[in-house]
Amino acid sequence: MSDDISMGALSGSIFERSQAAIAAGCDIVLHCNGEIEEMRDVARAVPVLAGAAADRSELALSQRGRPSEFDAEAGRRTFEQMLAPVWPQAQQVATA
Image (cartoon, rainbow, N blue to C red):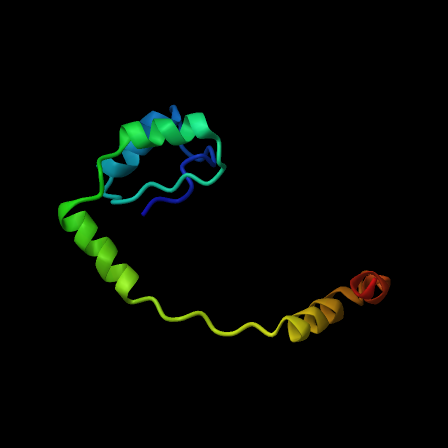
């Protein structure tokens, strides 16, 4: 899997970067900025996920665990504690 192909770390067009990522051995090309024309270029540049690449993807997805429960209130308290030394108003803002 590639990193975000739209980050600009590689030279060339989005289409060329996407082709290069596939040629380098990536099965999946990530595009994360949401620009539709770039998304279309990526889709045109890469093959449909099939064969061994699809098998690798399915195997990886099957290994995912369930996400742990998130305690939003505990998360808020932790966030406020982290902000307090640099932004004393955090407590007031967070509870407003």
